[in-house]
Length: 84
Image 1 (tube, helix red, strand yellow):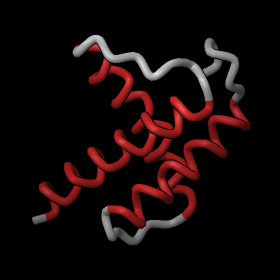
Image 2 (tube, rainbow, N blue to C red; image 1 turned 90 degrees about the horizontal axis):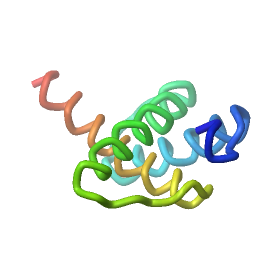
Image 3 (cartoon, rainbow, N blue to C red; image 1 turned 135 degrees about the vertical axis):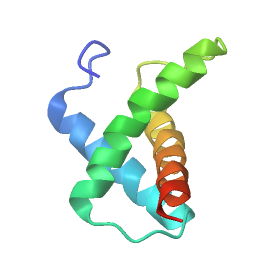
């Protein structure tokens, strides 16, 4: 996230918001730290997956928020598959 002009503090804030939104959307129960981790890692995962299909969300805050939300939802779904 540093390359696109989004610093570490902004990455933590955006990741926390994206993780929280994904938590509410997926009806999951996680803490603040897990929301931040899910949002940041989710943004990395979603950007990698979307780049395979030639889709770029851009290096803006909104782009990272959308990517973080999508990626966090994917990670929550994968975690649910392994828990069952």
